[in-house]
Image 1: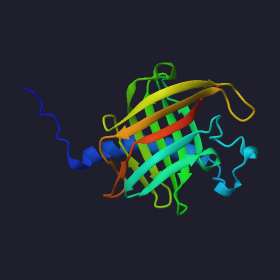
Image 2: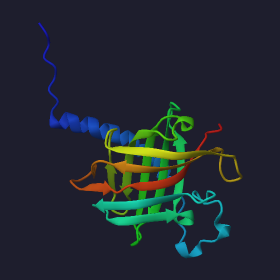
Image 3: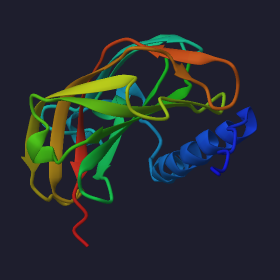
Image 4: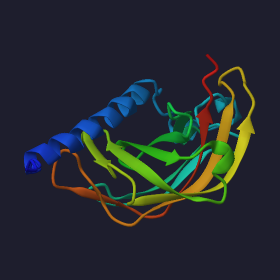
Length: 205
């Protein structure tokens, strides 16, 4: 006689969903705490080297946000904070970006892409995306693959410098086929196509 499998109740499904999301958000928050304040745009100058996205050419994040957060991002240079890391198994990367809306609220974006940097160029990869509305304390997430995709156009090796470890510059585009639900309320966020260039640092021990 076969045992009847347990029925997944809404509460148990929610517990699993938020448990997985919690692991991601802990990592995001740990990264967030390491970010310095954004510099005012009026102070941009060649002396701003050493800022997280002062790549050459500048790193950037550009695209449209709709829904619970509604604005157009056009961040680069000292108006954008960025960093990134390899996933623990080495078979993927996480890119982190943060910038200010026009009214001053900071938005952070985390893009997780499977695949080693050496094999990313030209491939369409499933992407996990989390967007943090810091002023309202809201998190929007794909919470799994199949909703957003990244197309990487170039990966460039970065040598170690005084301010950064060695790593890679990653340029690409992100698009999503549906809205990202909020983890805390009934709102959602829709992303237009986002173009980006950021860095992934290599842990040199």
